Image (cartoon, rainbow, N blue to C red; front, side):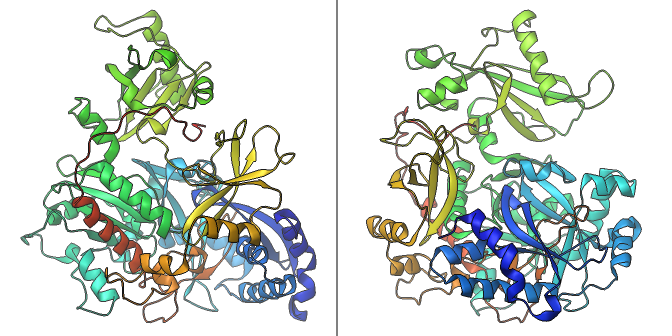
Length: 631
């Protein structure tokens, strides 16, 4: 069996043999693309010699999975050929020259702007070249939607890069404001979740859009009621969080402050803050649903937000809970002329004595992480947000200036130790909080300070695996009946030693593997973990809790499966990359219809009910068992 690289090379070299004569001369070029949530997708780009600024790309990851699962190579190649024919048949309203002119002309392109939303920390690599605007834990990226001739239901999109923005000769702020104006015409909708689910199942009338209700409408909002915020197309509706007037209108409907749950890139769930659920309850709820119900392509974030109706400020809900628990009652402000900061130091007591001044490397060796429960806040202050030249101060410069200040020029009211290794500096800037660990050399951002890591991911490295020496990193992820497993390679010895498989908590599942997730390993994991296909069907059945209900359809089990079926997420007109997908319209009976997405919303609703009725248990004793790498 070929490995991943061998498979991709084979496809690029042999695909022309499977194509019809009219495509036999098409140019095929391997193309790797960093997409949503920093996924690297391996594809092939097609071109026919025209000087078009965009070209279709077919991604091969799913085909490789089918090959791994036992599909005959010839059948896989025929499937790829069919997809190639469909991909290359998509037309555009302009000639290559006109397409280039359309993209280059901002006055024409701005009428087709769209905003997409992503988690900033999960998209650091992808965001390096993209124009983006940060909003709390999220980043907004900008895209040009290109209409097409062959099928108006297809949507092609060009992502706005820094180089494209510079060619337009406009500022990022101008781009953002123009995109907001276009977004206002996407017919935003705020409806209660129960009505949305009932309509999805064929019951009840069309849900009331609260955003269209008169301004003086009186609302009777139960504290346990969830609301869905999206647009009419239910495509990238989560980006409506950028509309300040919509967030304020929502606070009127919900009776004040509320939490924002990142259900997916297509919608947000809003919940009044007057209920009994804590920020931690909601984060746990979102994490579980994201891990079991939402595809990686459509997963927005695990970071729940809190909307303050008085100030209009978004704040990470866990940060807010942490802040209030530590006596800081003042919320972050919109002021941009100052950056406020807090300094945390490891407590001086018997429990922390062994790692009080430990570097990240030492903490890894001790199987520890940066645990906020071991820290106490020793000082708060602020520094100018602009440097001496009037430019925004770099984070690294701010941190180094604080290190110098709290070593050589202690404030008169400072009672902590001189800043040293293991201290954490929390910066509050423009409504966003970041935590920075003072390491042996420089500072390292540690988002775990707000929400400690609890699961393995594709980015995990430095993981200690029970019964095995050294540390390990993830090289492949495999979903087996709704559960994620990770193929790990040794950090030091790489492919010279056998791989191991762990679950999403880091627990060893299989070892001594030399052939990845082959059929035998998948079967063994299925049997040893006790997974049953009917169990999965029951867990993901329709929105009722009736165990006798019919198993849900594939779309109901995961309405976000294969986001590529809806709309391409990452294009780059400068590099000549483009991919098109089918944007489905109301009335479509296909499984991937955007409106047939009940299971994630239902799971969140069910999970909310479970959490709200739970009994309160004492906080567990602090544990020093190892956790995933901080890197």
